Every structure is written in C-alpha cells, then in structure tokens.
Length: 102
Image (tube, rainbow, N blue to C red):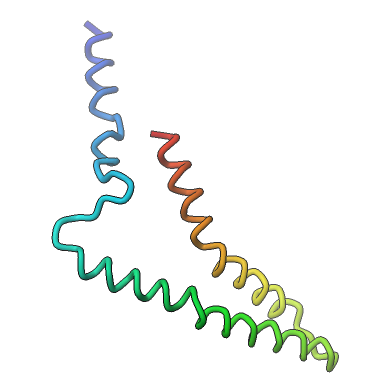
C-alpha cells in the first residue's frame, strides 16, 4: 500500500506539466508580440549594440590613457559586453540544461 501511495505522490510531483510548453512553441495569439520582440532583439543585437559597445570600450580606453581609470567601471563595461553579445548562448545553455533535467 505504501508503494502505491509513493508512486502516486511521485507522479503528482513530476515536472511534466511544468514543461508543457515545448521549445519553440508560442502561446496562441502571441504572434504579433513575438514578432515585435524578435524585431527589437535584432535591432538591439545588431548595429545598435555594436555601436554602444564600441563607444563604451573606447571610453574605458580613453580613461586608461588619461590615468583616470575606475577599475570597477572598466570591469562592468567588459562584463556587460560579454553578457550582451553572449546572451543567445547563455539562454541556449540554460534551456538545454532545463531540458536535460527534465
């Protein structure tokens, strides 16, 4: 009897219902929102992000040349660039880890 109760509890606690959304599946009616966010991502990850990153790194380089380098600011800029341009890889890694755990 206790094995049956344990099996029922284990079945109830399985995360299968939590992972009901398959990878790449979008909820009904979300087409325009997904398209708008895709456009925003393409814009921000393209020329805009590159220009902002170049300006930020140049600013850090100029601060180093003038001897006014704030190391915390410089590290923040470099880490921010890595996160900005590596966001796709970071999210893919998290998603693949979540799928393996399932």
